[in-house]
Image 1 (cartoon, rainbow over the protein chains, first blue to last red):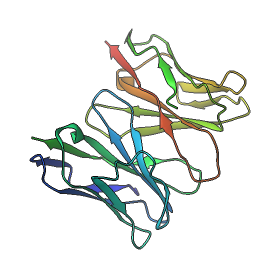
Image 2: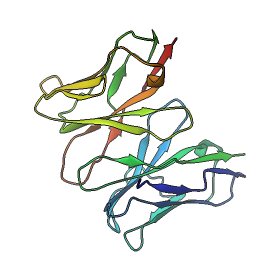
Image 3: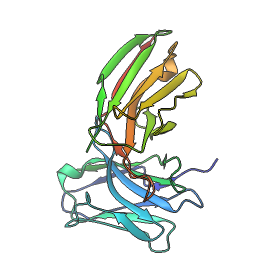
Length: 112
Length: 112
C-alpha cells in the first residue's frame, strides 16, 4: 500500500544546531504539506507545495525554517538554528488534487 | 482561523455512542475528519463537502451543516479500537489543493 515516507522517525538535537527532515510523498501526488504538531494540539500547516512551487508558507518561521521540493517529488524541511520551542512532531502529508490528505508517520524532534 | 472542537475529551464504555462537533466562524468548502492514536500519524476517516450530505464509514458517520458551518462526527456502538484523538480539518476554498486548518482535537477513550 502506498504511503508517505518520512525520515528520521526520531531526532534529538542540541539547541542552536541544524536539523533536517526528509519526506517522500505518495507517487503521483502533486501537493505536499509540512505540518508541525505540538503534543496535545492539532497539526499546524507550515508550508504547502504544488509540484515544486510554494503555495503557502505564511506560518513558516522563515528566519530559521526552510523547505524545498526541488524536483517536485521529495522534500526537505530544515531548521537552523534549532530552539527548545521547536520540539514537536513534524508531519509530512500529500494529496492528489483536492482529494484525501495522507499523512506520514512523522519525525519526533526533541531539542535539548 | 482554527475550527473549534467539542468536547475536548470524552470517556465511553464499549458499545456507547458519542458525538464530536467541529465549528468554524468562516464559510467552509469541506471538512475532513481524522483519527490519531498516540505516537502515530493521523488516519483519514472521511471528507464532507458543502451541501450538507452525511457520510458513513462502518459505524462512524458524519454530517456537515453548511449554514451553521458545523460538522458532527457520530460514533455508534463504540469499540475499543475507536480510542484516540479525533481531529477535524477545515478547508475554505478549493483553489489550491487542500489547505486544511485543524481543530485542537477531541480525545476519546473507550473502556471495556
